[in-house]
Image (cartoon, rainbow, N blue to C red; front, side, top):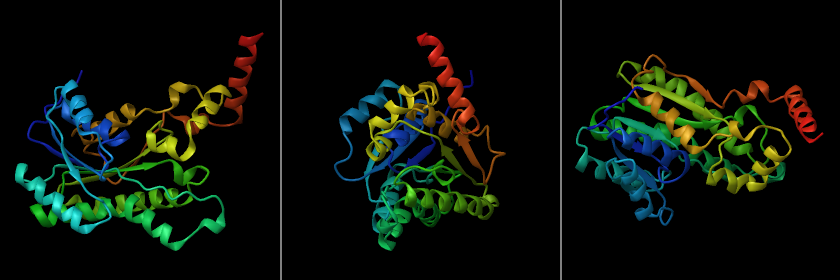
Length: 274
């Protein structure tokens, strides 16, 4: 088993108090890293969060209330971070997303698109730049959180998919700009993840349908913990040869998610019932 000592490492995760962000933070904390987690007002149970970090014997997280789309909030939290981490931010995980759901073409509004980009795309760029401005150096690792939305149809996911595609585009270009600075920029594209935000968009009924209809075994639906481990692995230092990559974490489902696989699952179900 590989063990890592991340004591003295500072990790900033936007939207780090729930879902993938929280699962990632717990992985870093278990290795001794100091985590800084942003969240919007009223969206975090501080006591519950602290108990989870105690359970992994990690440093207590520093929670920072902030709206990732507001520059003043970004400046304020970086100032707060400087008080306990004068050297800056070693690892930055851009995790916050905003879902403006679309039911038809009539729902397409420029203002909604721009808001989605403000939350789901631009923070990876702006936080990285502001970290350099405040501390004099970029994070050694910048990780963007994406999804398979750009390549797959999800009802109402139009603008989110577009924002994730642009996030991936910027990840590639940022990796070139920051390479000489010694930084690595990558984006992880997760498959279907059972998180609070995903359920809020598509409902629990979606997961029940997928499993009950035999469209996919429940074992290939990602958990936040699966995702957190992938984020941690990418930031561990063992994968520094990877830069500017869009990394798929999805149990290989896109390859097998076709009519033949559905037929095989259906046939297996029929045989078990006979």
